[in-house]
Image (cartoon, rainbow, N blue to C red; front, side, top):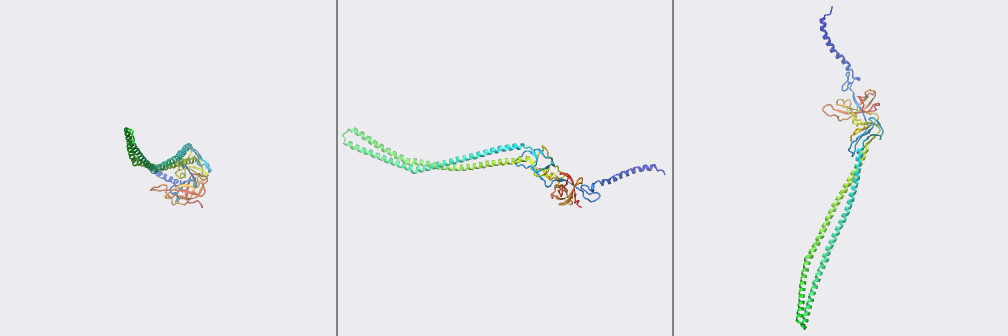
Length: 423
């Protein structure tokens, strides 16, 4: 029987559609077998319930970080020479030299400032000594002047006033004696002229002159007594009050001088303390700058491998620094790490879903990507999440190797499996 051409033509399109539908199904089988060792990252193997592998990086454990913590210098930290990343170093080796021109200039200025501060402090101390000596001299002179004024007032009251009274008394007695003498002379003349035969005109002249002299003497004596009375009652009293006022003024001036000198002494002591404090600050600043100057030649604190960057840079997703000539170093944060010669730690992240397999103290197996090396380790898990949010959180994990992975280097990517390979 011959085939019907019309039937064949009708079946061709359906056969083509069937072939195209069966092609993806045939290719899906090899794709399912692609993951090596039956593992898929973040999921499960297609043929069973084996958990997927974790990946981490080899991180330093027991390493020493090197950071710049300047005490006074605030300028730049420019690298001139630096040992390469991963270079072996011995304790005390120079690992980096920095440009010290700016700090050397700062040190020079600080030394000049310190020398000036020392001169100023010495000058302040010497000026204070001179001022104190001058104050003591002025105070002694003021006290001596007051003492002289008091002695003069005492002498005035006890001696000079008594002398004045005695002088007035002597003057009064002298005046009375003079009047008495003149009266006697006048009486004698009158008696003599009564029995004398001289001319009456001469008698009249002599007697008149004697009487007139007696009258003038009596008036002079009265004036002297009135003047002595005024002198004793007013002039000497005013002079006494003036002397007493001078003594009081000198006493008040002495008291003011003592208070002023006490204030000035406190001010001098304060100025000297401030000067000494400023000098101590300058000395301390220079000492801090000298200690900062030593940081411009960084030395290895221990033997090991020199790594650029900080310990926290050796985690998944981080990029450790690579320092070279012309790089600028940051202060108050690690810039170098001296690590053991071979890695002893693996850093990786653990999500909430993975905590059951990668919990605290879990035993793990670490392999290089080539599968050539492995080591059984214990795990330390940071209890505080690295990322926060309402979604899945992530914890930082650090696996401590019991034996180093030989032939590896820090930062190398490795695979981490839950459980131990020990049979």
